[in-house]
Image 1 (cartoon, rainbow, N blue to C red):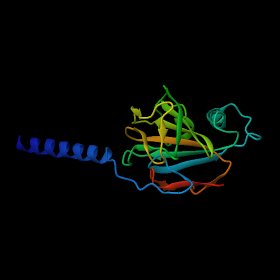
Image 2: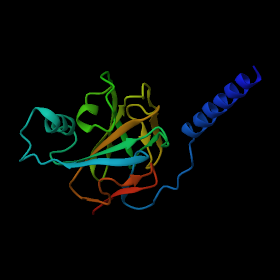
Image 3: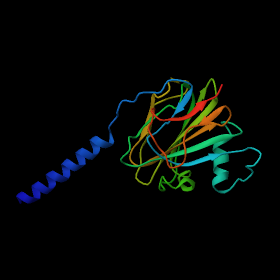
Image 4: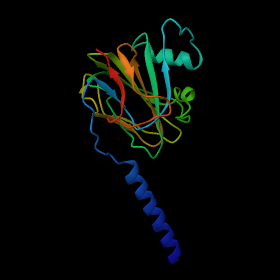
Length: 205
């Protein structure tokens, strides 16, 4: 009987330690200058550059990408970041600006690292505008484990670069869509990034 209590105690301790680790919210030093920072901790699983002259497909992955980018700019970078359950799950604004809209959309719960299927998942869309580069869209996408998306910003709210905009509970994905004009990307596929800390692009004057 005593051994059972020991095992239960160890199990409870491990659960508490995991939750403390998962819900951690470390301070981040936000880089100064004309740049965009990562909106999430994790690994970059895909970088797509759209071209309005080339994208004519309405089906499959590129059709979905086109549908998501058309209200941002004619040519965009679509950057997807996969967050494992071990990553910090606080999402941050990539640049200063004003929130234009937020929209929650119900969907599936496919694995978050599968880009094509994940675009059919439950998600929260945040559209914001920056004076220098224009509109930016962030998609908080639920994954196989994630069942809760938290958006902590609202329409017309002004945000600073690196400020908290929400979080996704457990493994998930965040996709950011930015205009490719006047942008110099600083990242590559497979790279690890940290929300509010890692620079993903320079803003060209």
